[in-house]
Amino acid sequence: MALNVFDHDEYRPPVWKSYLYQLQQEAPHPRRITCTSEVENRPKYYGREFHGMISREEADQLLSQAEGSYLIRESQRQPGTYTLALRFGNQTRNFRLYHDGKHFVGEKRFESIHDLVTDGLITLYIETKAAEYIAKMTINPIYERVGYTTLNQEPTLKKLLPHSPETPDGPVLVKDGRNMEERLTSLVRRATLRESDMVPKYEKVHNFKVHTFRGPHWCEYCANFMWGLIAQGVKCADCGLNVHKQCSKVVPNDCQPDLRHVKKVYSCDLTTLVKAHNTKRPMVVDMCIQEIEARGLQSEGLYRISGFSELIEDVKLAFDRDGEKADISSNAYEDINIITGALKLYFRELPIPLITYDAYPRFIETAKITDPEKRLESLHEALKLLPPAHIETLRYLMAHLKRVTDYEKENLMSSENLGIVFGPTLMRAPELDAMTALNDIRYQRLVVETLITNEDVLF
Image (cartoon, rainbow, N blue to C red; front, top):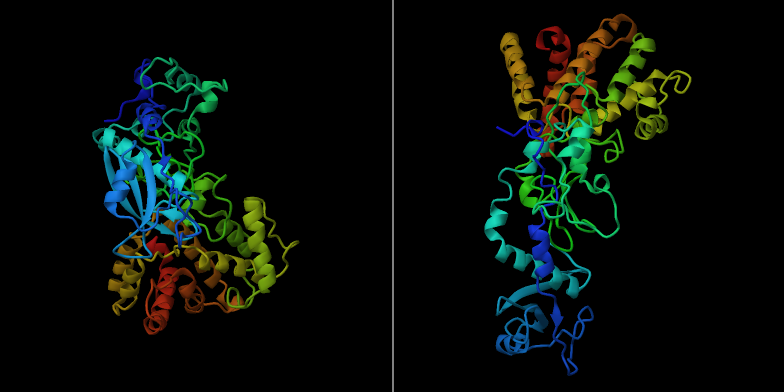
């Protein structure tokens, strides 16, 4: 069971664990071994550290001077390929070296050989000295004690923070005199935010991307230093959480997207959008449907007739720019088909369709069932495969489309017609061949038609 930080006033979250930071300071410094003679055919992207086609033994002798010594040599066995020879742990280590505009031996890419060697020495040193420590970093993490919303009282938060420079796991003091509050990681800052009890707690995985942190950074999961010169860890593109790559594998699926990171409405993951805006459903869906029901239910060919694509794009830009403040009233867009077009475009541009790729095969199989009762049962089970934000949005949309069919005499739009329009809009085949995808269109139509007709039973 996670410790409640409010039970113990003396508990100090180890926000600034410094062991790995200290090891980085102790790591050997690069020492370039320069070649004194002119070398023919030296690649233009290498400097005097390039020694041409010398043997491993010659390289070993040249590097025996000191830890951190390095040079580049051309392979004798494979001319045209290059090796970084590096002295570490009183032995010479050889790495196949590549260049594609940047230098690399593994995943990380560097502007200069010096930076590559610096980062390599730091990594080798820390992973050699602290292998056991690193293996245990994810055990009993600060994340379980702090989380996103546990610390929701600022006075208590300040009391809990480390304050003594002598504390082993306390803060590393910096010379610019900034106070402690300004030096907190974004995790602790976010932890002071309150969540609204009115909005469903949709689960969302973090959207981690490899990231280079400027200046010293500490992991917001285990609170340990993130070592290296570049690509020291990963950052969630939706909420800004910064963690070690290995810690990212155990972080809970509790991403709380931040509007500072989520800057658009269209082409944004649906769950990410609703969590960022703290709503049940995407505001674009609510606003468009409310506008359509206020003035368009009797419009002939509703959803079938297209509005001007330039004006639909204009509505999209308004949502991306202004969010819920976007003006989609009749004053701005008199033709209701522009609003229906903007709604359909929103669903078409979702990176993960409303009926998700994972659930798609189950829905298609359901549509192939001929017995109406069995099809309904199967469809009910298929709906359980959708994420909560998707099912809530689908429920709201189907209730709206059912109301559209109530005005079928005026708008000439039956559930079958709406199925034809919305089938390919809400469902997209996950990487199927063209013929299979074409065959699926009739089943997509049937899925949506059944959802509309039986909206009151299925949801």
